[in-house]
Image 1 (cartoon, rainbow, N blue to C red):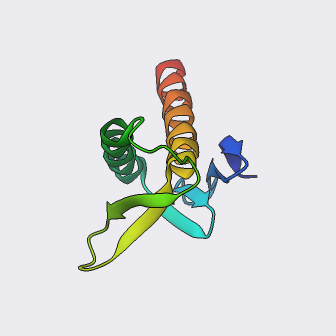
Image 2 (image 1 turned 45 degrees about the horizontal axis):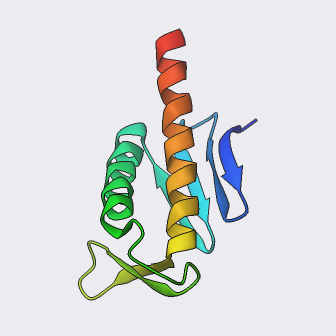
Length: 103
């Protein structure tokens, strides 16, 4: 059975018991990642979260463009969506740290 780490109205993060990959599903986006890849994505979103903190008056306006490795392609999120993605990633990372400490 999959191990759920965190979920909210926008998505969730779980770990597949067979592959041990983390599955982040957010809106209509999905990321399947190793723990290291997850942490790299988490750091990227943390930087964007800090950079965009309180810069937008309308929390529902999709005006935050997150660059992707694909040229001329970006993920476009509202502040509210970025907050929810950040929440999923941070809470999952916290549970991964606890898990590592407990061994």
